[in-house]
Image (cartoon, rainbow over all chains, first blue to last red):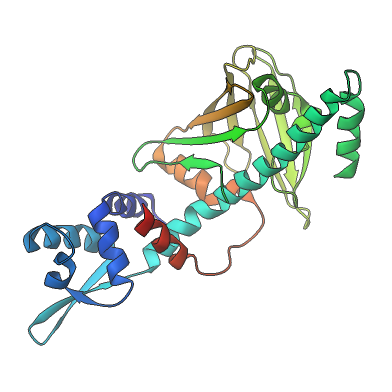
Length: 127
Length: 159
């Protein structure tokens, strides 16, 4: 994903009302009035939020009869989660392994000094 | 449950990784600086890590390679700046698959009465470099599967 697009998506997600709008739209299309209902903000304010979401490609708007409906466009969200997920997994797994290693090293120290290097070597062989 | 927090703000070419460990700071520091300890944890289990050079002192160079089950090798190298201490391990970091795109990485380990907060800040040359690094997932040779949208929306709702 292009970096500027990513920034737009992140910028759009940086607001709690816009996140709530997306959550509501994940249940189905909605009008501005329906989206404004749970909040103590005006419909024009909601329209402004929708514009930001639309610019980020997160929302598309269609007209049905007299109603203007907003709908969730999931693809940019998918791209954002994929963007961070692998990196997050890399570090999650590394740090889980580090937890195990630190646990082993500490158990080792409790057994007395001088055995740490032996256990370290053993841990390495186990890999 | 993920205890590793990764912050990558839009428009700022930094990545901040924080994690609390249930061990004293000197031990967490050692695990980051002693090669025979580092190879036991850095990277996912399905990648083998080999240290080629590791001269952990001011001006010393380092290089390691991660190899996946298919035999794909991913090399990284850089230079230590200042003698590493629990207060700061400062090093440059370059993925050999993208030469010339160098990050400056600072790791610090703060003891909190038995536990340690490890905080690593990576400063990239540009937001594009930062985004590319994250997108690479550290060049792990796996593909994402499944749809995380529901998970994301649940998170959005909770935040």
